[in-house]
Amino acid sequence: MKEVIDKLKKDFGVQQKNGLLIFDRERVNEIFKFLKEKGFGFLSFITAVDYKEYMEVVYAVKNIPEKDILILKTMVKQNEEIESINDLYAGANWMEREIYDLFGIKFKNHPYLKRLLLPDDYKGHPLRKDFPINTGYKNWR
Amino acid sequence: MEVQRISENGFEELWVNMGPQHPASHGVFRMQIKVEGENIKEVIPHIGYLHRGVEKLGETVNLVQFMPMLDRDDYLSAISNEFPLALAVEKLAGIEVPEKAEYLRVISAELMRIASHLVFLGTFCLDMGGALGGGTTIFLYTFREREKLLDIIEKWTGSRMHPNLISFGGVRYDLYPEFDKDLKTFLDDFEKKIEEYEGMLGNNSIFLARTKNVGILPKEVAMGYGCSGPVLRGSGIKFDLRKANPYSVYNKFEFEIPTGENGDVYDRYKVRMEEMKQSVRILRQAVDGIPEGPISSQMPVKVAAAVKAPAGEIYSAVESPRGENGVYLVSDGKPTAYRLKLRTPSFYNLSAIPYLLKGALIADVVAILGSLDPVFGDVDR
Image (cartoon, rainbow over all chains, first blue to last red; front, top):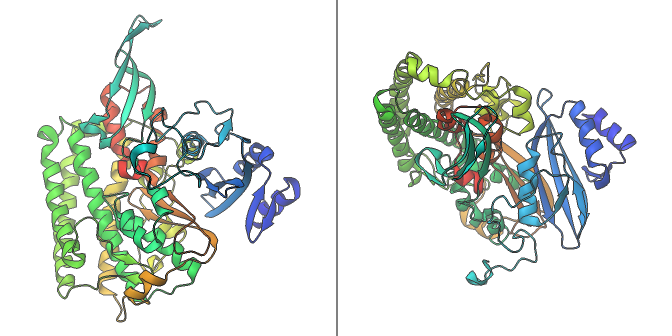
């Protein structure tokens, strides 16, 4: 585990702040390729957090035999895209679609980037902080 | 439904729409299935019919108020939804939990695991149709047992399915006086009943023919899709959060992690059957070992007003009947969470359905879907 984190910091430009690993969004594919080779073959979840000025995409991968979990995150600004990791982890397909649906973050090279939970003609991305709430039904569509 | 074209093998290719209101889909789930004769060529799943925006609600109400809402998420095993949020908040805020409360949490979680697996078994056999005289027999049997179990939970917490038992720092309700007796009577009876079910199904050639070597999910694929719980263990990976990362007091109990070999429908069924037996084992050990003491480290009234998770982020997960049920909590120090991601196992288990159904027969769709045991409150949130 420590080995992997050291290697990530040295070769992939990953920074560690308060115990959290932050990487550059341009290098998402090479980082997860490396992690998969190191046994982190279980993609636990991908999610996002809206911090108003920017959004964070959070990845959690697990090494099942070693029982390790690694949580990495990256920053995505407004109108920026991030590479899909669908080729490496099949489960990323739905997870990325969910993030696109609820946050509006676009994933490059995703095979089927459509809304997953909400109807196709829904407007807006509800988990963004600027999404209006408690306004009745008029924002529904 | 429209006729697309004649394939190179000379069959008509059809798009068949299954759901969203289909009795065998265990909820509201729609699949567009492209079939060539009996063979499935392609599947496009559509989810979200039960999407209630629980994560957004979690950002608008207090953490304490949010707890009963989580019960409705995976409505067949409510405790395993409450558990990870309690663990996350307690770890962030540094709240101690008395040992008795930990025992009560484990007991309730295991009771719910049995109740949930019984629903799986009943509805799965109902889907299998022809086996066992229309399949209704075992459905009624398992629901009979489940009702006894839910009666115990109701007597304890006042609610059958959504107990809202776990609070930050402990549990809300102490056990009632005859709980030991009730539980032991149930367990003694239930152990015999599991054997009865296994006898009915394990020797039934129709059941075996419909489940063995159907819907095979190899190890690597299961991991890539993020499948967890009985689906992952059915594929032969020995991974259970109760052992791998023992939370609460699970390290005090002896139990095994059952695994399958081929990763087919039968293995997933078998793993769940074995898990029920292991839950009985845990329950027997737990109910004999409940220590004396308080059931919560916080006064309930105080908790409602004062629980604030300090700023920070944390991921904590528990092993629910469906797999890894986790909460990724981002807090900015207010009583309301800044962001609350629910890592609900059914969503990830179900995402493997296009892989599993490709190349399968149309008759196996309900068997494969049933073996994943999705709960659509859990998938759509």
